[in-house]
Length: 411
Image: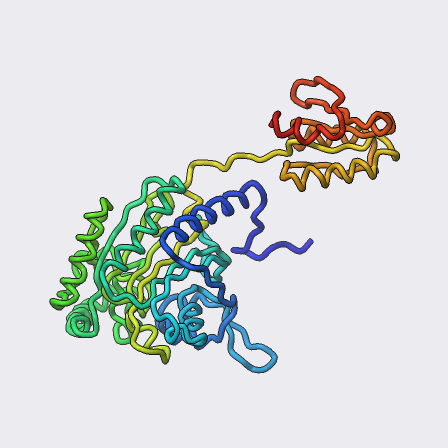
């Protein structure tokens, strides 16, 4: 028997219902905030992710699923949604018609990383992008939006952390200080961080191996006046909105395109990989991809990671009625009645008309249906339906044209 690949999985009912319910909550909140859905391809040119996410990022250097197609093109399954959304924004000329865009995407991403709790090689992300607004209100809005989704979905026990990564004006001096510090302590660094020293020293602060001691020892960034004012305004807006958060000067996030505000939502319930959502500003990304100089901010949420900490289980849904044909004469009438009930949006099972009455009743019990609706020769003659309450065992005959009204009153 062929089995699924490690890190890829089947999501069966009722777990699939948890995904649907959470997605519906997220959609309602995002609709209220004015975000519009965008659907981008699951496969893009490999170069898109290298150019946007960064060649030295773990995603690109270690985790991307890549392939060469029959035409010799280098392709990749999307490891994240932001690059594809920005490409779509540029390719479709949205910056000409309406440069300010509030967009969201719900879809599967792919990363060849080690599977662990709440983290798979194929996983679902909800992604939000607020394109074209440089004001700190945009930073505050996307964070509040994410918090509201979590609150409505009854996610508990998470914290919010903020930092600023500065801009092209204040980051270079800090980079030099950090580079000098890392070189002085090269013998203490892990192999990955040694490789990052020249390519991207800032990434060492996000290292899973070294970040604990670097958190205390590494130099802290000194923001320029503009970045300091911007970050202070973001915090003031969040505080005015009643949101609780804490400043984490060591947070860098794992992608090259971030600048200024970055943030993470964390939960201790999923172990050392405690981030369940995060994002930040990427004011230079659109320009670096060949577009105009348009500032943006966004976030991504790993749905599996969030669902793993939601304690509330979805309410089970069972058929209200299960339609049964007692004999050959009742099969056509039973099928028609089943369609009528479903058209009336009554949860209905049945259709196993070739099986015996006893077998159909046994299946009706297993589905946890409330009523069995039995049609046979006798019921056809009297234009009625035998209704058996599978919970109490009581049974009665009801006129055929009254059955929908009966079920709606006795849900």
